[in-house]
Length: 474
Image (cartoon, rainbow, N blue to C red; front, side, top):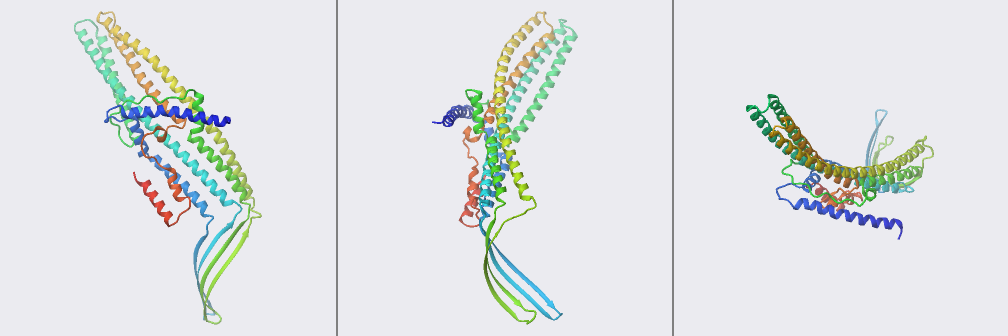
């Protein structure tokens, strides 16, 4: 067994180990809660089904499929009819007319590999475009995840701010009561009033953020959010950062796209070289002409049939062909460099997502400790304030510290969830197929299979019609 074979086997085991807990997590989020609540899986399904961006790029793929049919059609004959009528008058009296109609077929008999290279290049472009479509799918699903988590976190922030307004309102009322009996001064009441106004302003801001988040969700999924259930458990991670990077290098659609584009660029160089080759073509024609001679003024009708074979080759192009060859080599070098750059970017994205998970986990642990301490401090300060050992401002400051800690935890938990899905996207695993969302997916090969033979009308054309109807059905 070679090292590469061992590496592939290790990759498959790692991938399956990662995918099974991921699927379980998604399904758990979809089934463990009341049916009335929208799950994260529901949001991703809606985004996949209603994404205009996906529809746009599916159309781009179908256009690339047609390039294969176009390249194949170059190997077939071109049949056309030709009709011509001419009129001639000599010396104001003698008239000549000629009318003809012909059917002509022309075909390239041999081009020394030029069209074959064009077909192969078009196929590589199709595969690159399919990979690009997977990348768009990942972006759409990640956008749905981000929108879902954002609505969830901003809703929690609104609830937190509403509770803060209630608590500070109680503090303000208590301060007013104590002022009435002379226990505190007007300054203490003013501080409580200011804190209550600030809490109300924060609540208004949180509600505004929630409305913005709801609009983003509507754009991402095609519908307004209802009651959102808590997100499922976070997906399982690969054992190490290096394992995650290896998965990304093998699975990420951007790398696969760059690889196909590099292969197409290599074929572009071969195609530029093949342009110097000769072309052997044949022509067959049949026609009928009706003539009136200027000299004899007699009409004649003739039937014609003919065939010819010709070969041509460019000897001198004024530098155009060498320039095209050099341009193709430059494009090849560009594609190779782009592949290397994309590979590095995928490694960077995996590393950033991995670090984001570690950071969010550390933040949550620290914030939990902060919340415990802030709650103890708040309760202690309130108790001391009732005994006159603390001022109203001390109570408000302690309450604000507890509020900020709880708000920070909401943000950190959302960031932890998002970082896990960002890591899946960085590894190329954030797709409907890998997540097992249980919905029909777009088949990128269906349209290609229907058009790859360049059908016109016939039984093949009917197959294409069925594919087009399926694409148009929601």
